[in-house]
Image 1 (cartoon, rainbow over the protein chains, first blue to last red):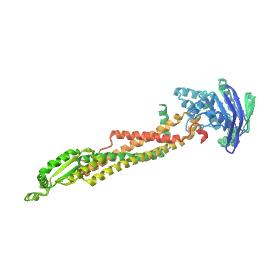
Image 2 (cartoon, rainbow over the protein chains, first blue to last red):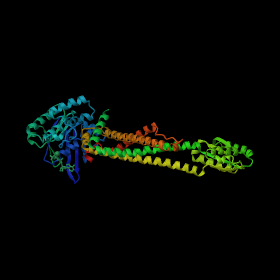
Image 3 (cartoon, helix red, strand yellow):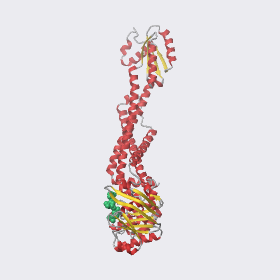
Image 4 (cartoon, each protein chain N blue to C red):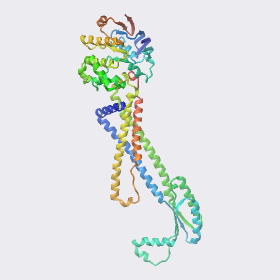
Length: 219
Length: 308
Ligand SMILES: Nc1ncnc2c1ncn2[C@@H]1O[C@H](COP(=O)(O)OP(=O)(O)OP(=O)(O)O)[C@@H](O)[C@H]1O
Ligand SMILES: [Mg+2]
């Protein structure tokens, strides 16, 4: 499902953000990615989601060699995954409804189906009442939930969440984690980066720890 | 249909969010297309005028006064054998004088009343040239023919507007070349203008494009609306310029007819043909899409999010 072999990512500097990453994740797993700030979590997710290429090594996701995807093959790869970005990446000009609908819209889904799905996922993140608002009019936690809704709307096989509960209060964070577990229960592989070690302990899931670009696998 | 909706959305973005820039672009675009339309309009009328003039273009052969009848049959044969002329008419010097008197009668009656003494007018041929004189080769033939005829006995003078004709031929060539050059130059600048406008549309929506790419939008999903916007701008610019050209043309014709009806006599002006108008609009669409496509192709794709 996910295979990293000898993956390096070096930013100019040189800044060795990821060093010799080797990892194997199976379909249907729920994994926490932990580590201090600047450890390389976001960098790891960027390679995983086809947002960036590794400096060297192979990244294989859902049967695709992500680092070798041609620009015409990338859209199809991205349609199979859902990503919750740490900085949300919402479009300010569009309403919550339009933002959430994007993944289905680019796939050419029917309007009626899109409306159904959007209302469904907005309900799951408790934002139905904000569907006509613009991202700028929302709180940080609300924006985060819009990003989550958008990542879920097209039933991705792999869900990548970069600190999806970072801006939420404990109650809401718990609600979102429960939602992610539900999505996982339906067969989606879920990969969550978080600083919340308390919660990681409580959830008792597979945990991958990353420190200074080096991975320690913990079970 | 899917793209049409995106295109309408894109138009809304451009015209609502950067209205003044859009208007400026459209005006500049219109100006460029106006220059194209006017060049073509001028070419159209120049061609018809010159062609109608070409029909009237004549070679005059003046004969000496000796042995007119004898020389006439020989010269007629040479003229007919040359195959250059479609209409040959001979005017005897007596007839010429008669015509002359008739013309003068109105203006100077006293002149006509004068006693018939000597006739200063020569006998002459008026030769209408077949259409192919328009080419350089045709002109050379006529020139050779004139030289040959000058050597014949009984021929006094052959007049065919030598200087004018040669100037006309080279002018026509230069003018057509210049027009093509101007139009090509304008097309190039139109591509740049539209490309620039689309570039600003793209940068205006850069963040959104990145997000679209991240949720798996295909190349064409992202690009098509911009290409259609370019095509639309081109079409609008071309269409409006034709409209303006038409208004200017009607105004000129109006003024010309009321002020110098005499001058225009026999010379008719034409507007661009429907075919040409459609062609200009089509050119707008093509050039607009090309302009948009060129600048879109410089935009990164797929990995763009990281490479910028
Ligand atoms: N685009 C970039 N250019 C240069 N250096 C970068 C870039 N992105 C990240 N880095 C560096 O790579 C290292 C890892 O960063 P990364 O964003 O992956 O950390 P993180 O684990 O996600 O941290 P956080 O928990 O604060 O989000 C850091 O040292 C960072 O400065
Ligand atoms: Mg991060």
